[in-house]
Amino acid sequence: MYMLVNCSNCHTPLQMPPGAESIRCALCQAVTLIADPRVLPPPASSHAPPPPSSYSHAPSHHSPYSQAPPPPSPYSHAPPGPPPNAHGRKKAVICGISYKYSRHELKGCINDAKCMRYLLINKFHFPEDSIVMLTGIFSLLMHNINIAV
Image (cartoon, rainbow, N blue to C red):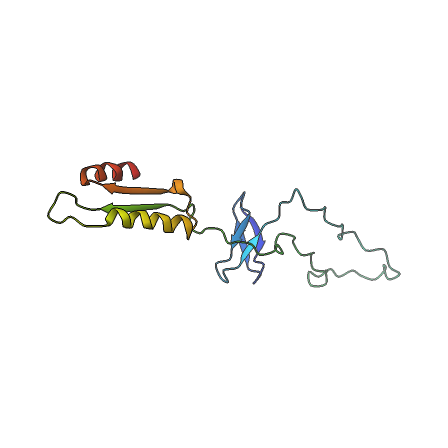
């Protein structure tokens, strides 16, 4: 079941899937972190009935506009944090085709593929196990492509 939370920036209601720790607003792109309810202090009881007044004999007119607003939700005021990856886990497939032993043989393709792998790991912080290198002779390359897919 989805839980409704307000965006921490524009206060737009957002539907948060179960188990999510943060959610990005589609309107303003702000990230709202969701606090774990198990570590929050219990809310103060602010919904106690008012004490009887000397005017209790007067007719009571309850209007939804005369009630005090509910206390702010602890979920909508979480500090901003790193945005979640919108596309899931990082993955990369690097192809280094040299067409070896053909008249269209290319020089430096394997080196370029290794440089691209280095760039992804060191500059873009890709995990090494999420990068598939496809290099070598064309027949072996096709076998590796079938494995990667």
